[in-house]
Length: 323
Ligand SMILES: [Zn+2]
Ligand SMILES: [Zn+2]
Image (cartoon, rainbow, N blue to C red):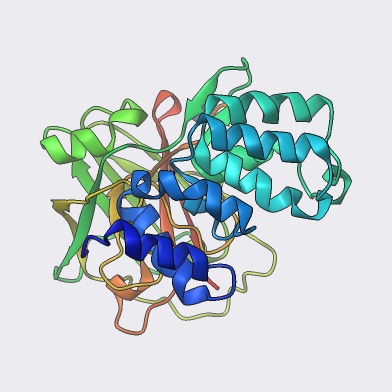
């Protein structure tokens, strides 16, 4: 990406409230190097540019305090959803403290929300555990996931629901330094193979039980959605096998839309709301592993597969979103 001089950023900031292209260019900067926007966030907030909230990833203490004061003041209850997203993406300790406080004392506008203030945290890649401690769900290091053509597997087990051969969505080993860095936040050590059904994962979160030797077994507790028919023909899964490519400049450059957006580690780009699954073993939110873009798996592919892991329980999960 070409480095934008500060004057160009200033022009984009001034244009962003009425020009979605300008906001998108700022979002690209926030993805590549969030800190470059930090000096401009006061002005963006003055201009009421709250979307996309990822612009505020590198918000400093003063900026976060301004947002908290604005929520506490209650003058713009209709903006509460966007303001909570801004705070979630900032991940700032002041934002966390305010969100915890609002959980017990809801601010103006909270009655219109579908979830409590703390439930916004996963949008920013973190959560509060049952013991009250904060937990990062995503890694700080990310790598391009490149597709290498592989022959059709002949020994693949069949999906118990649709009979399609199961698909190897990931095969990485922390013995490789890049995989070790991308999975560091999960605590995983060893080979991680995530085998799932590329077809049924589009309809519900599919879990598998994994071992550090590279074992991956369909979880018998997976619950088939009633709307998933059983009259379809088995489909061959995508053949490309993701291999680890160069490191990304930042953890925020996965793309669920663009070809070349598949990424191991870092943060997901969600198409819908953040959807970090709960672990079937313990009920806690699972750690995020990586994203495979439909575009990278198939010329006509769409949507994105999201991979997750909970190391203490040795469960992996795959879910899918599309527009
Ligand atoms: Zn299936
Ligand atoms: Zn668990």
